Length: 436
Ligand code: XUL
Ligand code: CO
Image (cartoon, rainbow, N blue to C red; front, side, top):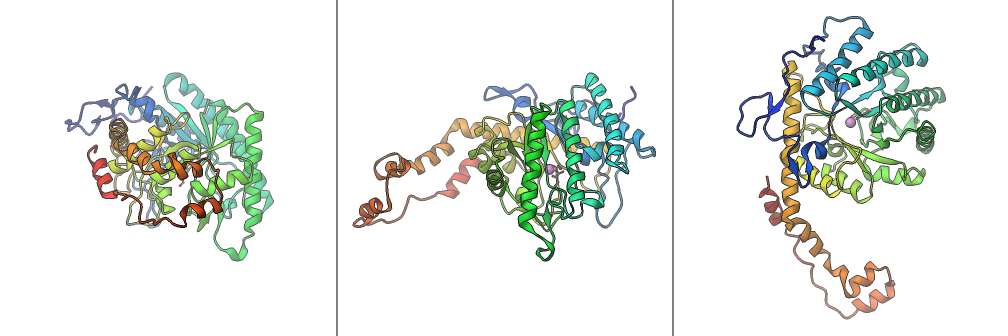
């Protein structure tokens, strides 16, 4: 078969001193870190939408990227070529997984039936490619935000015809994800939110979204989909306010609609920062609640207030992420999915490969650093020690939930209480820097 990306070689590990931009400096798939290989820890994934479809468009300009399929005009031939492209590129980069939205792999249709027919053809082709390439499906999802019908959301649209269309679309997307052996299925409410309170019945919209997800959960069970269902938080963009704002908001939503046993979260770095959190905050919250499912790995620009979806290169951030992931016992069925796009001026195919390489190396270094922090033990010990009061005396009784306000008042009435131990943040930051 003729290569689609002849300019991209199979990427190999050459070590930290290499000057070769088409080699890994830190990512060594079979290197063991704390008992598991890097490949087992990191479970990288490539996205179809940015990597195959992204052209570098922005609100001020058309595509800048030069791609091998630029001269293809037939939509199905184009879809097949890009599909072959993602299998080839993941394999050359030794990325084991990919992710897609239904409408970014196959052309839409005038009706749902027509769109399903296009999707079936591409899914059949993906199944053939899976025989020749090692690439597997991390997750599938339905794209419920591009077509004008979804301008007010899908499950939260004021129009029931649109709710129904979206439900049919999700049903099909779940079926093909199962057919392809997908390990997870993602719900990101593209426009599940509102632009103005003046025209919005928020209570109804939230209830509809809860019902929509209950139906999807039940249908997954009905068809024997064994993958993990994931919701992806994002506070804004494209709508002004999105209901799946952050991990804490989704945690509450899952409880209210009885979804807490069936859903986990797909947490994205740039979405965390848009919500005013660090990604470590989001991963930590999900971890302690038992709902850390998977990660969309990218980074934003701290000077820009939108979802820039840059490739992750910040070692301080990747270390903090891997720290939480190690404490979570790994990502299980999830992965580190590069939901990231190259910058508009990075128009070459080589830039696509190099963007993934730097991202993979950044997480390999983050993993090494996080494992070293945990083995050293000073950081976890500090936290353990900070709460030691809850292991004895009055603290233990509070921890055992065996006191009343009156008991505590009696205990506190005649004691002089000054201040707790120093938090020592600056010192702890110096400990982190020892490992970077
Ligand atoms: C959008 C985003 C989506 C989801 C999948 O910001 O992250 O691409 O990951 O729908
Ligand atoms: Co994402």
